[in-house]
Length: 307
Image (cartoon, rainbow, N blue to C red; front, side, top):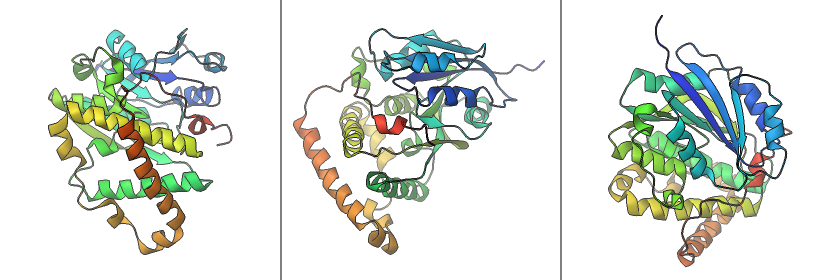
């Protein structure tokens, strides 16, 4: 019998009672022919809601649910899983995604199976419908970012990597080194991506591995997400400077990807983006504290009960 690589799916969860049961239900229905899903591990990071019970309500032998007594943060959970895992591939999923297709795990793992130099694979994020001003503001930014990707020499870059869905090969994750202060990793997906390149592996964007997500719908969540990204960029720039110059170079200025009809339709949103950008830049320069291991919950992206 031909050997099939084993896969561990890890979901770091925090106050995810609205979506965790649905997500697990979608994952146990995944069809796989080239890999074997060995386990789905949920670690509730000291959630104050009913995350653990909701996760345990999905009865399946491969689902394992654990809970931290104190909040440790996303990076801590990732390190814990990667250091303890012996699976050929580890898939990391956020707790606030929606899975509508039965082949996303297969599509995510295939690039690693087919090419032993592939250390990391990113999935394809698609936004759920926008319903208010902040979500529409984020939408136009997302559209422009996708146009930048389409205009670049390759889609297999950091711009298509996101911690909402990613897979790591055993060859890569067993070579990972972690900073003493996990806060120094910044955004975990960015750190893993550049560590992948720095250790001689390649990254692949799995276009057909599609999951859906919700944009933040409050000003506070919008600012928090973008400020976190700004602070993370500062950390990552100091560690992977030479790699970053190549990865983030865009063919044109961001605003050059706008179309006339979009300027008219999204004019108030573009003004807000402009003001928010400079506010975040200023706040980032004034805030010299270290990148924290944990962040306050961006709660609006987890409100998926009506999706």
